[in-house]
Image 1: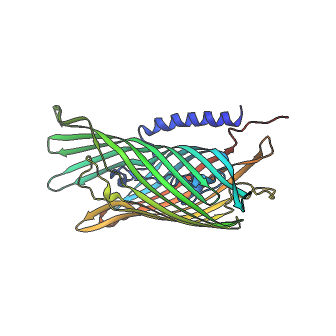
Image 2: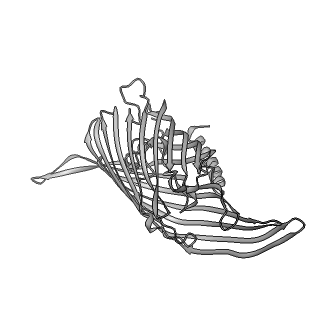
Length: 453
């Protein structure tokens, strides 16, 4: 079986696994902060991209956050990533551990067209060729989780009487995305992507009131099915020449035709020492579909690469969650989300240099500070939940040759992230997570016929 067949079968198999897993939500978190909005924002991207959302680009490289980064692609590339997480959540003097993980993403990118068009000058009526203009057109298909929901906590009250509330949630929103990019020459790249957003978020709350003889329970189960369209437009400029150059990238994201369908079943029943009260249905809502407003966002990034040895990147992304509005989460305040990332890469070239005996091992380091969209008010004091993430990663390249002696490479990437989120002030929760990601970036050449004399 050749490499292309393996890629196709692997992609189809993983697609089935991903779609099946996402119908109930992958086990990514048990954070109480995922109980708000559409869940915890994952900022899904290729593991090797680090925090380079707007400018990560190369012969085998691109970013989900800016479709224009696909413009430099020269080979067919299949990416798949898996992650495992462990963490500790602390609140009100108590701690809880967490273990989980799942499929991070999978994506197939391919070269659609790459052609040089001749350019001419007309001097004194004589038409002469002066060079050529490169036109490149590339595309990708990807599937990945966009948000995740997972929480399980209990709240006890003694005023005005003893009560307990148990809250459980799961699910998330996923993206099935198509992106395309065009390169005009070697310095300007334009991109566009459209993603079908789908997923389900489930919440179950159990409220109980014990007294001396009876035990009364209210069981409130809600679920919301999300469907919608997300679009992105991006641009990237490549400035400089040879092995030292600058990249500047920017993108804008917006949503359209996004709706939610909710279901809710609320029942009350009692349990006594010698009797049982049959459940009495209080609320039964089935299939109410309404539009929701999603936050738009924009990003800006800059990368400087020096002699293909070192790359330094700065990236910022902002989402206007103040514009988010959903009928199933009324009277909930959200703030503008901002993500600031810095990255350092050793040996950033993503293909084997011509004169090198071996491809250098890429090593990546990065830091990201996030002001999340979640804001909480306690006794008149507002707390905006912040995140801090540091990561380190490296890749193991595997080089082979195509039938025409073209050098192709694949890379196995390893990445480790440490994240802290939240605060213990105001009765909130502080979280620490350690995540390990393994991804495979496989390069090949498709749609090229062999020629024989």
